[in-house]
Amino acid sequence: MKFSITPSTENSSPNILYKPFQLDLALSTVALEITVFTVGDIWCSYILYDGNGNIRAEYIGPSTPQPVIITENTQFSPNTIAGNFGSAPWCLEVCGIMKENTPLEKIKIEIEVTEKNNAQLKHLKESLPTENPWYSIKKGVFELTDENPQNKKEETKWYRGDFHTHTIYSDGKMSREENLIQAEKMGLDFFTATDHNIVPTSWPHSTEVLVIPGVEITSPHGHYNQIGVRNSPFQDKGFLLLQTTEKLAKSFEKKETQQHLNSINHPFLGEWKWLAGETNLHLVDAIEIWNDPTYHLNPDATEKALLAWDQALSDGHKITGIGGSDSHLRPDDRYPEAEFPSLIGDPSTYVFSEKLDIPNILSRVKAGNVWVSRFDCKIDFAVEGQIAGSRLPYQKHVTAFANVTGIDTCRIEWIINGEIMATEESSESQQSFEFVNNSYNYIRVTIRDLEGKLIGFTNPVYFGEKQPSLTYWKELAETL
Ligand SMILES: [Zn+2]
Image (cartoon, rainbow, N blue to C red; front, side, top):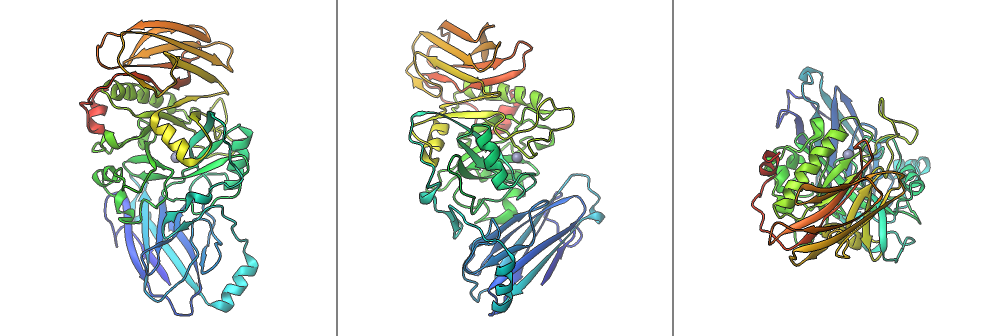
């Protein structure tokens, strides 16, 4: 079977091509082989639903190995789910995201689906490696009970991780195995797998690094991560959730069973900035304040994100600031004119937890027990003896302490309610403050080198509470 889409045949919005196709499979079919061909500057994704409406394969170009193979019993291709074929028609939902200003006459997607019977499957089995997943999606739901069986770290400490990574299964250059190896080299305890618009259904084993399933929801209106996600975000509405800013904002709502975190990625970064102004800030668990520091547009975008974050915090929101390397490149590769290679774990996000598992890491991120840094720099930060994320009752006078290790010289900026209240050119700083507001205040630190370049930042310690007055992202963006 061959399916094709061009902008002239189907078009649901200026930047998105979209069309679902029905697949009537032969009764003898026990495997499918799917190959995508594209012409022009377009990213093609598809989701394959079986006759029961369950997701059986997810795909996004341009570098994902093809063809994608789905069978009854064994997982051959990553991001697929083995299982029965049944007799009801299947559905192939296809979505192409175009770059703006691409000449439409140059765009075309073609998808070839080949059915295999038992004899042909036998031949396939001999020619393909099989997957050995440590977790798997079933009926679109992750079963996380058997996560990382060999990797049980049960110490109470700061765990080092990265909340934004890519592989060859979207547009990254590293395989999943290579990401694990590099993460281990960087001393990471965990990372979130956030390929564009696909939730991994499996991951290779690691005894050292916890891999948290995730997805970078990638739309023409901006990108956000679902961290610790157990369902495909597209299971109910399909790719139509990417269509408008309203639908994208609505996808932040969670069902009661969903415990993943929503984190807006690189909110002020060039053409990937966050445009879904309808996003309800109360549904935003985290903001990726610091995206890949080696990318030339990020130093400015990060400063803007810090300002916006301080506005939200000052308004009474508790949104956790995190980092993400957004690593796409190989360790020996770097962006043009970059000082450093773009590595997984740069920046690193540190999370205080009793143990290294997904529920604990997620709940600690939600609680804001988090700081972010580069270059193995560690930030010991406490206010009234409490770590980042803590909330204490209002009090007038507080004492605060910050100690930075892993870097020779630095500047510690003390931020209270969005304002720099003290600066010290030292790796250690002890301060006493008197709050001006009499109900709600917060304190955090930003660490810079002596030229002002960002080295790290902590989440705040909060005193008292405040009912936020800003509800939507657009209101926050207008404050800048
Ligand atoms: Zn990304």
